[in-house]
Image 1 (cartoon, chains in turn blue, green):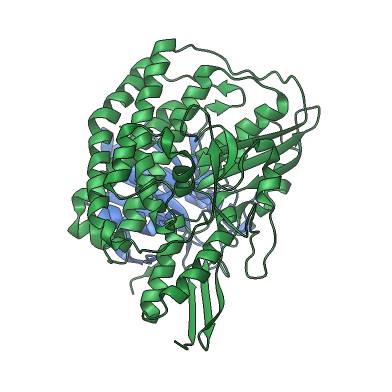
Image 2: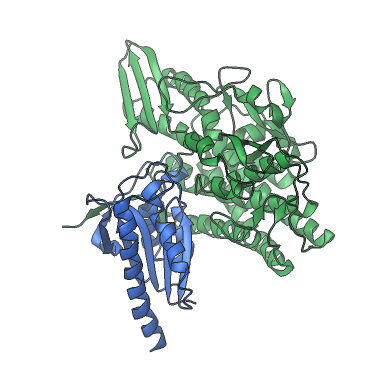
Length: 157
Length: 434
């Protein structure tokens, strides 16, 4: 199994929400043997499948954090209060927060789970990223590459 | 009783104006009771225009992360209809297997993660993890198998890649399908039977409410229709999917950004309960026994029972998937190439039953194989008028309950339909611990 799993969450059709899948596209050029890439689309519950048996996992998603568009924050689940939707009217209401909470309660979280949150400018239907989020994409790639180097050195050691 | 009642439930405050329940009663007279929700593919036509027939299904599968397979298959059927592409029995069987996997996954998750918490009155699935961990793990186990079916047959669990116009770009291995069959029988079937027991124990909490309406689904002469068939109305019988616009009759209402639909009456019902009412006689004995055990009878007019019909379908999907794999083994897997040689260019209609009900895609191609016109009508849009009509009947019947109880009953009603809100809600909202 690869040393690092990167999961991109989001819809390619919804403006800056595409940041997760687009990061996966960008990273696929690396074709690094220690890197597993997952485009989870917008089925957030699906990410649970990729927590199973993994140690180092990064989830990349557009996040509303109250920062300017394009702002990147890397955090782990213990650093945040997950804002859960207690009364989803549909399966579509089970998002990343709910999936992480569920994994936590079921003791399914990878030992090292990091979330790279990128503040979107707009998640309206549109085929392209906003300029601030395009810049953030480059920075997010560097964060993942850096992590990949560290994790693969650990794996080889 | 003369009463004032004012309920506004903003489920998705982040997505303004969408997914709200509004009820307004003055002096005992119900003035308003409705749901407003976004209809996802409003931009559908613009997005599809100019795209080649190779691209259409890839794009539409990304409309929605949860409904991706449904959009993809319906899109392929529409394209094949427009371009005159014949497909093989093997392709049809593999697609039906995909439909069963997707239906199993969606129905089970809806029953366990949305409906069960209501029936147990615990608010959400999270308290269940502490009290009923085995049940939550069972749901996730069934989801995993459904995911693996999608992975093996379509190349990827989310946004499948191998189903293409005219067939599949890659055929699964015999051994992979036999392993799925083993897991269906040894894992999913026992889990499905346990699910029936769980739902049976919760059945007492299902609200008793009936409103007979028009039920619309696909219907097929030889099987419980999910992948193919004619449009069937419980009021007026069958018509070809090519006449879908005569059935959907979309119209605009003031309170919703999304169009509503009506056929022979002011509203109609699509989804598992409609399929059950129209096609129950074509289910196998195990699925029929499951229905009986959970108290679902033919011609059920209680919308809350949609969840129970979904569980019955889950049992059907498990067993029919085994039958499909057996048939694939019988005819022998062939490494056939997809048929991508158009014999005509023009208009084509695709229709499948996706978990939430009947879905339509309608494309017109120019003679280079590029789309010049596209339309898509999703199940949730078709159900909206019916949800509103249910609310108008339900509120006066439960008016003696507290405002909180009435609100919960209305939320449960909406959840029973499991409306699609276009994946707009997955985005993480983060509060950092100071």
